[in-house]
Length: 106
Image (cartoon, rainbow, N blue to C red; front, side):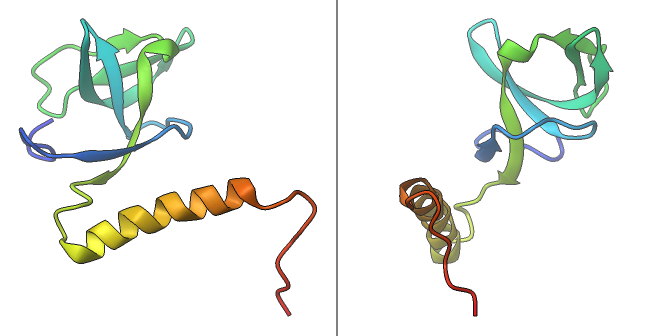
């Protein structure tokens, strides 16, 4: 996925729905790989690398781990670390809030 991703880069991955143009992380041959979504056909995602060195290939949805939402989120130092922790904390708080209770927004 050069030039967007280089060896040693980290990626924050979300399990949200894939769209054309997203970078998808998927499993193939026991490895996690990263390619761009070129489209969808026959219930599969059609992926290709950014360098166009490999032909497009279809991947079954069970192979897909998620889509990349951020590249190198922790390289920005303390701000990146705080952002990473706050996302996890917010998700946890949303899960633990009792149903039917909404915060007072007035």
